[in-house]
Image (tube, rainbow, N blue to C red; front, side, top):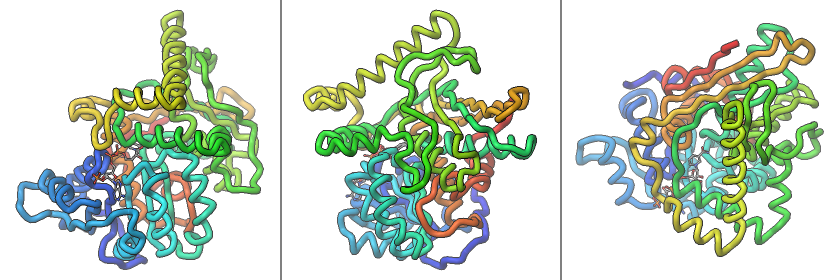
Length: 419
Ligand SMILES: NC(=O)c1ccc[n+]([C@@H]2O[C@H](COP(=O)([O-])OP(=O)(O)OC[C@H]3O[C@@H](n4cnc5c(N)ncnc54)[C@H](OP(=O)(O)O)[C@@H]3O)[C@@H](O)[C@H]2O)c1
């Protein structure tokens, strides 16, 4: 179905959106989503880019049964800075799945920041975001480029989820919650080789420079420098009983990314939710002894995987049994997958006014749903009127309600208050 994308055309360029990395596992899913949702003759002018013409043609052939690619194809290697600059000048938005971002992403961010090209990606590499935010913030402010990392399962449900429950709290009670708890009630899916490679590269970087480990461990790593921090400490690492949800909880591996993004959003909003705002994430595992056993098993499993990925010989063994780059969950796993997130927003003075939010998606979190979230983020950056200028934003501060509306209208996601 071809949808009308919107009206803000302040930056006239050949394309509205270029999907860079269209030949990768997640990139192909984004290409399919854009093709099925926006077609090629509608208001969205988009192209696919990658480093191999042959692979791009194969992706194009998978989209439509025609010998001529339905979507323009552009060959660019991210290590060729001139070519990346030319690419950035042809489009209003680059939407990139070229990762690990710490290895291949910096020239793309630099070119977008320098050329006023809006940008979105799927990175979960906190150490890399920390680096590029500080290096290119001024350039993006000057050019007007809005740079938005973490537009997938990490960290859209977290960041837009908090934005949503806080909006609802303010609309109903005239105040913002001083604490939000994010709980994964269900997440069925798998993992791709690109995600494994990003995690392993992060571990290599920490080994080479332990200061990077300090950045990753800092709960406020992504807050702008010289801004006050807040009361949150380290992420949950063990099984814990949550009295508010009356269930056992396990550590959620994505919390190490998502919590930093949500806290950055609060800082970018001049601490709209207060300087004492608290935020944490965990997985719900049920009540009683079984709930405890599941929580303890997830906690031990996560610990062992992190330990194995931190020790070189074990890292090689782990990598050999996990998906290789270009591979990921089966079509069946993606289609049958889904996720349900519950959020508890706590009223600062009256617990009877607490709100429970729920976010759902109709595909697996990391790939099917992520591809839609990234695709809609790119379209939103291209078309939706916003009141922020250039710089490094988060999904909620750059796209907020416009993106929630798009995700609910086109991407099979729901955002509700359930209690
Ligand atoms: N946040 C989330 O929820 C989430 C979800 C999914 C993925 N991710 C992240 O997204 C990234 C991609 O994951 P994936 O599984 O799709 O990886 P993948 O299958 O390995 O795809 C990587 C893509 O990058 C391209 N590429 C690599 N080096 C390049 C270069 N120098 N120039 C141009 N293109 C280059 C590859 O091109 P070739 O095809 O030519 O090799 C491929 O298209 C990873 O960083 C992953 O962690 C995040």
